[in-house]
Every structure is written in C-alpha cells, then in structure tokens.
Image (cartoon, rainbow, N blue to C red):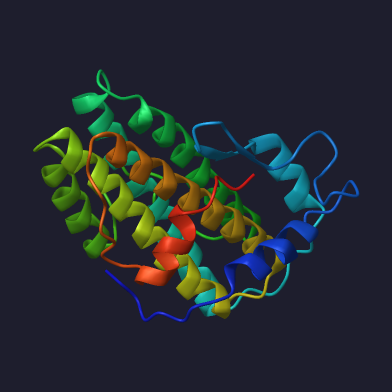
Length: 232
C-alpha cells in the first residue's frame, strides 16, 4: 500500500494552498472557509463554500498523473469513511470518535468527487456500495482493517491511526506530481484533515493507556504531527 515516498515541506505548502483560496484578505472565500475544524479535531469540507472556492480557480490542463490520482484518492477517502462507519457500529457506544471522523471523511470523498465532476472524469465510486472498491489493494485493506478493528476498541483506534498515516503518505507522494491549483487546494486540506485525525486517534489511544507506534510515517514526521495542536 505504501507508495514511494517523496517528502514535501508540509508547513510551507499549507500556506501556499490557503493563499490560493481567493476571496477575503485571510485567504478564505466570502461566506466562510471551504474547510472547517471542530474542537475534537474532526476536519471537514463545507460543500457550498468549497464549490465557490473551486469556481474561482481556473480549470487547468489535466495530466495523466493528476487524473489517476483523483480516481485513487476518491476511493481512498471512501475507504476511510466505510471503515470508520463499520467501527462506529461496533464501538460507537463507547466513543464517538468513529462517527465524528466518518462524517468528516464523507465530506473528504465528496470534495474529490467535485474535482472529478469539474474535470469530467469518471467517478470510480459512483455505483459502489459500502465496503466495495475497484482498486484491489484498497479492497483488501478494507477487509483487513475491519477485521483488525473488530477485535477490540484499542485495535479499532489503532486502525484509525493507521488509515490516517496511509492517507498522509499517499497525499504527500501525490502532491509533487500535481500543479493544478484546485487539486492542490483540496489535497492540502485533506492533508490537514488527516494530520488532525491522526492526532485525535493518538490522543484517544493515550486516554486508553496505549502509546501508538507509527507504521508508515517516519518517527520524526510522526512526532512533529502528534506533538502539535490541531490545525485550524
């Protein structure tokens, strides 16, 4: 699952992406920002605000790498939503984190769908039921993660952290191949959301007396994320 890593300077990237939003002097569109962060770290796109923000940006020529990335990311964000929904059905009475972040992930995959529509690309998830994917590696990952998360609440929280690690790695790998402003805007906010969700799962594990060990991020990158506050 882990793609070839090409690390980017996430902090510097975030500033550039927010500047691309247009609208008010703070880089957000009139009517509110396209991406919001709740007190618990759940981070979501506001559909109407995102639509306005994207409409203000040019529709640029799309490379094959960008088209492939959008199709893959649409299903990867769907995977996060589908897994968290299943985990919420199992463990939601004990913790609300799975429901809260599942709601966020629903907006994440919808944001990528908006980009597919904007570029008149086929939506690979258009007719897929929960738990079904066209990408074999995502299909297998879904089954593996749900099975792991079913064993205990702690295992379920670890699954959440794992999903967010994978998302961070895949987005950081994709971004150097993408120059379209609208895609970079959405991916930059997806990165922010994944970092916030990773922080939330790691904090929930700590409250259960468990220290999470990263499997996909380097120790330094992981530490830089989880030792800092939720990004707004």
